[in-house]
Length: 387
Image (cartoon, rainbow, N blue to C red; front, side, top):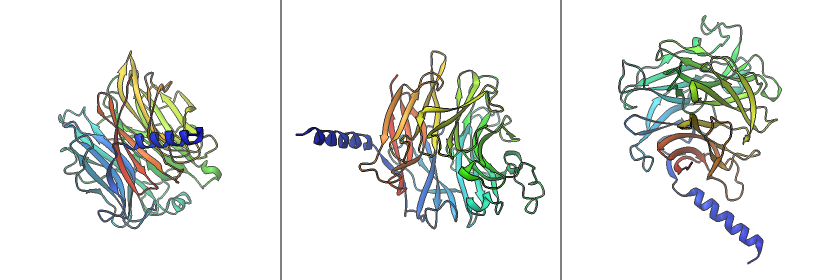
């Protein structure tokens, strides 16, 4: 057997091992939707996993008749319930699901689930030109997603649109246009001065469209009173910041992690905050986290020697949406010592692994929900990790 053939067989073995344990969650063409995209996932206090996605009625496009749908797993992702529509906007767009559990509200001792989402009435390109409006909403559930409240519009608190013809309150000098939550899970601080704060990473475009998407920048918003009021954090000072995610660091600090829409540097944009995401202490590109201009997900999963253990997942091939990889940091995200392949194409298929979200499923296991095989479906996989 020659060396080239041996290498090929070894690669096929690696791919096959990476594919073990996948469970379909949302399959395009099923349940009345031609396409499912943009996964998000959260665990309930009862141990259920709730998987969210955009159910796209007419096709795979980012705009159109789009609902936010949900499925439930009671067995750590081995099987999933039937589909449930959680949010819709008639025949327009409801998307970018960002779920997070509020576990510190004394009015809801068993926890209350928040689902933040966006609506839109035109294509993103047209909204960037000022010909459309994106809004920000949330819904809540006090029974772990079985039933949901009416939606609450928080656009004036979390967004800065200049649309006085639509709503007099939408007349901000900043002129934000395109807008999107993370997408993926939100976070709640568990310790320190900001314990209980719910924080949602987001992004926006400002003013007329610019070359290389430099009209985009990332930001976040938060609530300290369990959804009664919201505040905008400082915009991350990097042009091109887009879809973003965030995690709690030790001492109640925050790490923000965003996609670089410019694409000139194929790495994640990172910003650090010591005041719970209100302002940024430093911003940089983390070249240990290569990225092909795609969404990624970060999550706090534990603590070791006074530092938070973080997990990060993205398509780790700089040039294409492929090679989905889970990384573990034991020092608040300064370094990423462990790396685990989640899934990758056999022959470089286009967009083989794209958007993903992660959830802690056990002391040493992480669940990854992700888009696979050219957006033909969204699957779930449990991975073990070690210190």
